[in-house]
Length: 156
Image 1 (cartoon, rainbow, N blue to C red):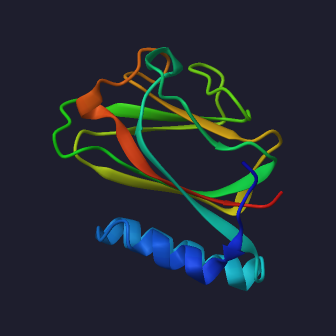
Image 2: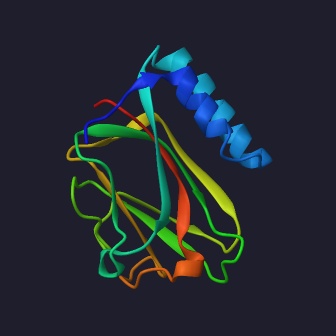
């Protein structure tokens, strides 16, 4: 699965359609203002994911299997969620690690969060993600608590 890059403005439109929460919209606006001003007209990809869990439950997800940069990560907890869930992002083209990851974020039940790396966080091998019940554990999230969202990635 190579990257399918397109104009940043098209990715921006896809991202803005995913959430109407003011804090998410403000962060997206800041990111998509920063990129053309400081990085130029770079090509990006909108990469959605749904109901992630751990590899033990069969749902670890490969988001990119080539070197790339991560610019943003939107994560939302389901409306029926009852506990906080954690998304973990690993620099690997096939496997998401429970303990050795590049970025992680806990999302409180029923909430939405957005992390941004305006200059792009480099991943040498690719990006794999997983969802667990704790930041330092490997127990996958239960079906009702599995996180969904998207990544904004670009070329290396």
